[in-house]
Image 1 (cartoon, helix red, strand yellow):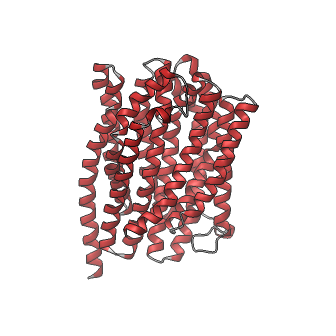
Image 2 (cartoon, rainbow, N blue to C red):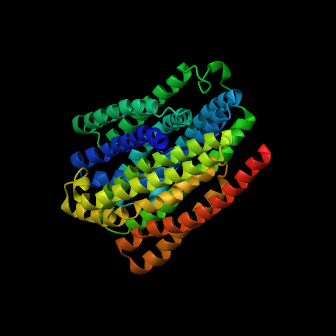
Image 3 (cartoon, rainbow, N blue to C red):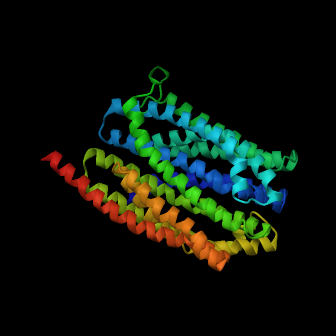
Length: 440
């Protein structure tokens, strides 16, 4: 089990890591060749973009769990219906998010008190970036299907190719064409379209049960409802994290433009570590889903504990490395010593905190694998979102220091993790009892 989960997770980890590194190239190119103001402008959109992309990731998590469940149960008809319905649902959601993102982005940036000198570039960047959101929805759909089937290598290859294109386009658009934030946004949108095209075409060429076929491309009502039942709460859960983090960004924006730029540079570490850890959450959901479908009680439990141990270990190790080599990391995005000093304030606190998030996120993935999405979402809303907003208006409002703002992450993760674990233990026991009753 340990080796299986590790070997399954490594391509996912590399895929997530590549995606983050390629996205970080946007920040690196803009910071090195367009200046601190452009860096701050792009960084000011990070939380808002994460809110929308987090929703898509949550939706794909529901697709992954449902597909894995039917694969484990060897229900070929349900696998096919799930995949075709998921494709249409993902495309529709991507288009809806595109419209919402383009139409509301500037208003949200104004509500966040984005610096006047940053807001025009930030709004322009986000509107162009969102042109790639439907493609991102389709890539996440394809990645979820292949991962559920145990194939994590193919999405990695497609992402690697599109990532190289992203870096090349960044350099051409920003350095040669002098397009500034427009260049990095356009490069991101085009590379997302490429990765979506490659993974969807692979599914259309596949002869497996999870392959796509034009003749079967229709919405199955019950499968679509199941996808939405699992994916929408998970998506809202991720989006609500983004909403709560908007209040954190509001706190950051109360400081100088230098602090905003330093926070933007340091925040790249969040995606780097979260997405590497997320490979084990996907493994947890996939392995638990398949074993739940086949009724293997012991392997359901073992999948959770092994995935939790791996995700905590990698989060702790990477966090400590960032504390030690933080200045070298920040130098990828800026040469301004004041911006680097501001970024280190975030890295020093967050580096010791990342591992804690594994107890929350891995447990949420485990509950989702058992078909439980609504209760974990409510717990996250209360423990990590409402709590964070309350922290901003109480603890941070009292101290008015940047450390008092960043400490809310570790505190909210700890509180939410305790509640999620208690719920998972309850849900696991009831689910196993149902399996035992079915067998008897």
